[in-house]
Image (cartoon, rainbow, N blue to C red; front, side):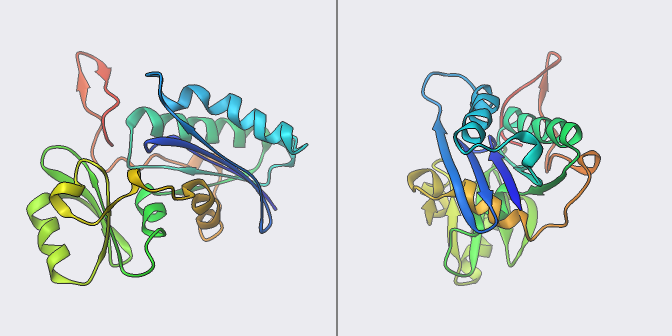
Length: 209
């Protein structure tokens, strides 16, 4: 099975090409010039497929991060996955960024990402809890022996490790987790919007989802 996995929801762009258990290509793009990661997505996917002599028609499964994260990044991931899967007549699999980050902990992970409005997107005990007030997140952390994974904004508040300061192979984790998901038709691949995108003067911002 050949899997094409990609993620533009988090602070970097991840693109992975995998054949069965072998990683053919794993690329990370950091955004240093003010552009959205999604601006580089299509060209990066073309690059890794070409470098490995893989044609788009060879892809069996397209896997993508469905959020939460950047609203622009979520839309880019899901839209590209849906369009490619439709054109190639292949299956898709969506994985939450919370589940991806939970895999970076050895055991008992708790993932809390900035959701703004004094809240965090919370994942613990094997499930997504939603957008939870920070005081309640602190209570959950203090109630158990969790390995806390968070981001740069919340790390000073919640403790634990900021995934943004580590070099985790998040694209490869996404590709691995995709195999644990039920493959679906492209029409059923949906963004994970825990909170609705903020709209100001008719323009959807690129804040956190």
